[in-house]
Image (cartoon, rainbow, N blue to C red; front, top):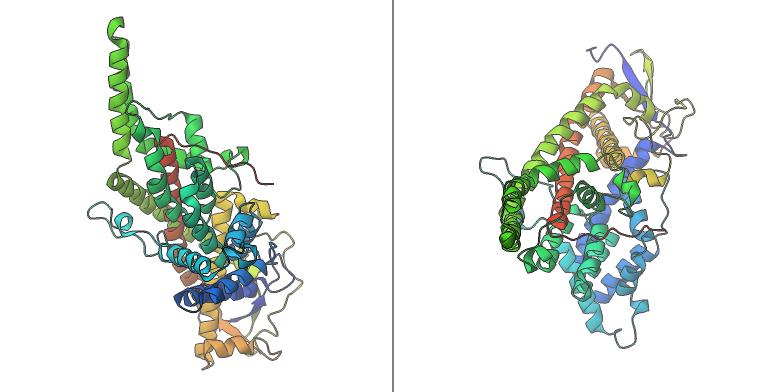
Length: 475
């Protein structure tokens, strides 16, 4: 590695699928998302109930379902939430302008705010699930199952909590499959508690679940990020590893079935009905045992740890391997001699970037339209790359602040000035990039590994319990 005196990098953010600075836009939108989460927490912590509702209404109604130039995690999820057919029901439940004269009093406002606070407080993995893990295994990752809520996400959950008692099991399943797109851990907890009691597995002692390949495929696809569980979701590459995990979990049932069926076929004709009934009851008990909370929680935990380790290794290898392409795509660099004045003149766009650049850079094929974000692996990779650039930019700002004896806030204000200059030793630049890669990979692999496991868990419950209601395609 070169010493810091061998050369500096002067750089500014490149244009990337936008007319403005892409990396800078990602960083600012990440900061805005953190601010939104804090505002949400503060609003729900106190204040007049009608003021809280007015804030929620402004937050939702004032936002058009369109995506900004930088397609970030937050902006895409917001578009999905505000353009979903179910949003009209959520908004009418929340917004006072749609309430009838009978319901427009303070009692209704208090009830709605109470549900919003309940949704916020329960937006974490409950202790019974987080504490169920195999002995001698490390604890759940700190962010496993946790979702920083936006106003729209919280409104969806609050409206579900308020109306679920009037829903049929099919309607609950449909609604939870929508909520799982943004909060898979919370969706699983409700699938387990709200739907299991309605399942024929627990209401009919002789019921046997259908574990055919097609059933498993559809169950997995139902809990992905698609607007529907139709054929497009069925073709997603992530369905196959999800089904593999499901098949391993269901192995005790399938082994028992293979062992019991020959005995059924060899029984005298006069005893076939009785033996068949007993066989079905035994298989039913085995399937019920798989639905045990401890059994399922330990399986999900083990799956999450395995997926997290695999994702971490993949992200580190991928983003260390494409460092040059990442820097060229997000940051314009030119080598200068130490004696030269090195820095950037602005954070504005430049014209000299590779015309073949796409986002995410690490993907073979980039995002060309909003619908591409439904592809599970591409969606997860895009969010990881977004977080990597945000974190790397943050490290660069912190380094510049320390070198110039300023605060990070002072640096941010300085970037608006035309005289702002920035330079960094090349070896430090590489070190900060590697640090950003490893830290981002650790955090995102933990989150995504857990999400994957909860989605497979949802598929397991719906398969075991004989619940299936693919959502109609959204127009």
